[in-house]
Length: 197
Image (cartoon, rainbow, N blue to C red; front, side):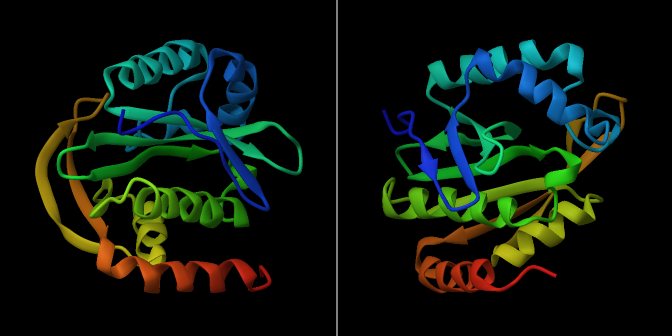
């Protein structure tokens, strides 16, 4: 398969294949900041975490997603989830998405390293020609994070999705293409070596 389960380990974070045994730690993580209350995201409520894990694992069986639990190397506990998704083996493209972190782990070295590990695997192991990122047009925190990675804005899909509250989501699409990866890689490695402020 294009997306075989894999573990990706860095200095601060380890991405491990998602499994039901991560349930309780992920419930604790999502309660840190009550992340599901952000109306413009798709973050599971604590009571729905089991169903969300099952949904992602179902998509993994179909070959369209590879879900990960994000493990803090400091604590050994899950602090969030992320995925390779919308896998297109023929055209060697994936999207990195469905990502969330507990509030206390946001804006830390974990996020940069997590994206670095996934991008490196996508370009150097899967030999992708492009990696996409998508988010709600008004989610400026997510957009700034994607842009800091070095991704370029491809465009906006207007009225792309219906949100749980019935509003319409305009989705902004970013990508990094294979020819950009060497420079993006160098930049991310430089960012990870800088002291955090």
